[in-house]
Image (cartoon, rainbow, N blue to C red; front, side):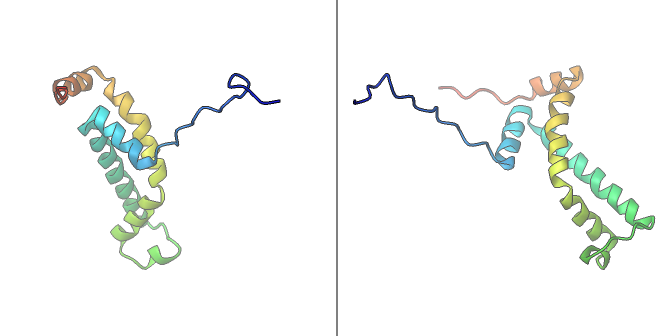
Length: 115
């Protein structure tokens, strides 16, 4: 028996999940400089927090222990980068809903391209 076109079921094509960088680019397109500002703010807070922890006596193990305090703090902040990006993805839309920030984003939105 030969199957007809109505007998066969084809699975819908599933688009691959976008990479972290692609998702960040989409966030930057939607929220503009707010996403970049939050990303850098969290980076500086993370590096600063690790720097203070190292200066207060936290003993790092491994290669970061022999580097300078700032270099070790930066290396430690790179370890927690996935968590920092998760925080950026979660915080940017929340901060974008604050009325003052939402008005600022609306005023500074680039014009739509003409077709």
